[in-house]
Length: 103
Length: 283
Image (tube, rainbow over all chains, first blue to last red):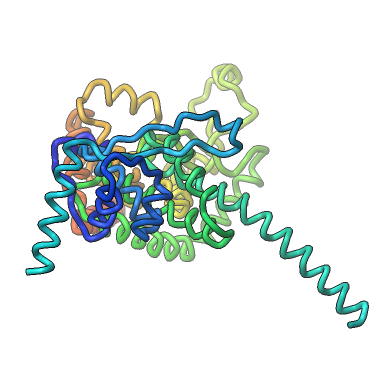
């Protein structure tokens, strides 16, 4: 997204940890923004900047769900899933956080 | 239960049903509007994504809360995109300062503005304000307001035929130009959030496009709101020999070093210049 942020590691806040936590339960699952909001308990103002920051860093990838909005009568959802690099970093970060909390 | 109670009950149910129906539209309108405030290249995506999210929210109040909070998401995304090198609190503080100073200035100048508006109306047909398309923050276009200084019913051909210099300008227009008051309505653009008191000059779209193609990285100037006064403007006022390349460098310096301190320094610089000009004229 950001022109100069592509190679930078995204900032990890407590809210960002909750977003990562929503994905690591099953690294192959695809979640829409609403699903992540429900699991993480984050409001849209916090959630979407984090999702887009992770996507820009290459930790998440996203695509539109494969359906025609006119047929289902609602807009398409954007589905996010962890990339391989994202899954590795997410489990590293979460385990580091867990070890600090338990230490 | 009397028939009055039943009627009141039905009326309340109908009104609440009507209001709840409008919440749906209001929430969608807010989501669309807030998505437009995000960086241009992701605005369409966010609009569809947020509308889908909205559709899955459980109740009408959640719809509204979600839609309102999308404004925060758009602000943070826009900030990450354009001004990630400064704290998100800086543009917020500058905006509050803009609002406070603009409201104060408008309150003080209201009699003068009313007088100018009446004078323009009395002198001839035509609107009080003119508006020109300019490039704003994030590359979004807006209309910058100025007082009308020219006759609306006197085309160029007639002006040439009349021959005398300045015939195109109205009398009030000439006075406004001399007193540097033509752009006073820019304060309304500041109030609307399209401009700031301090920022780069608001450029016409074609001119901005040309400068961006000449100077690499010049798009960065659109990371902040254009201003009534600015870092480059006060330098130009000090030395009119400053060329467009130097102006571009000054604009970029301002954006790269954007801070409350720099904004305040430009404000004081402008006031100092205005006083100097006034006393030079008086002397």
